[in-house]
Length: 214
Image (cartoon, rainbow, N blue to C red):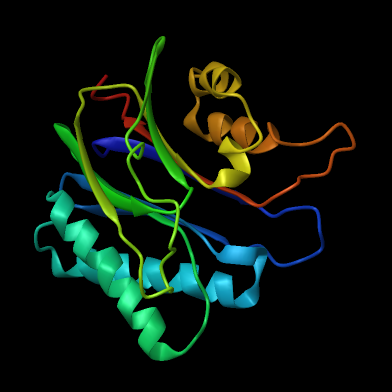
């Protein structure tokens, strides 16, 4: 078994439009790279911008250079911003990318998607200093690097479709479930209205140490 167990889930909003949230988890050596990108406006161009971020991260992981440095990921997001503008594609997106090792979490973010660390009663937003705007694809995005020492607990990266509609305490209650796949499904269901409708796309990635390490 690997160093970490992960779960990914995307649930589109109940508006009949194709979802624009994109998620990814990649492994390179003892590192796992987590990505959430939320295309602006739930639009086709927003979805394409989010997909461009995933491709940029995949290319960086394939190169294997500097993955455990937060500055690497800030540079990757800056490059995505510039490439989206030069392509003339017109879409914009949020992004959170985090490289997780047994020792640290290193990454960068821009927009209103967030990365939280949970352990017991503790909860900390690793993306608390990010700039909500401008987004990637605007040409003026200002990704902020972050780092955090960790030796356990659960990391949750998610779009605002979760964090905007759900109280942190309710999220904390679900994160404590034993099965990481069950956690992902439970979290994605939390924003549903009484009618059963989902007001926004929900995209999320969970990561925790594997059972063999705990």
